Image (cartoon, rainbow, N blue to C red; front, top):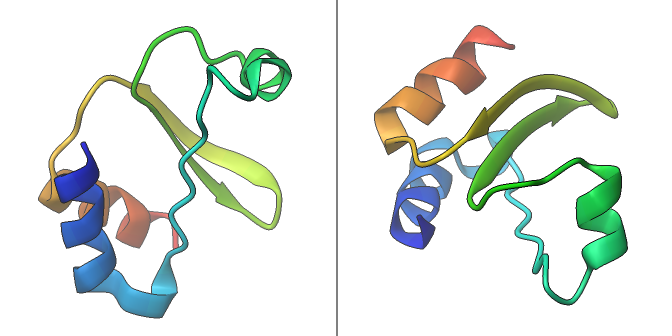
Length: 70
């Protein structure tokens, strides 16, 4: 998943901030976000959850989803 996120960051630059959470080290945070499978992708704007997906997704698909939310 990391190469896909790097490609996405390269395409979108400052339009997006990608944050990775180590769910083993931050178990309380993972529980509060209800992360039950890895990877779990979430899209937020101004603290509001706009989109959530468990499993992998391609860079083009993620870019399309982000652009739709703007």
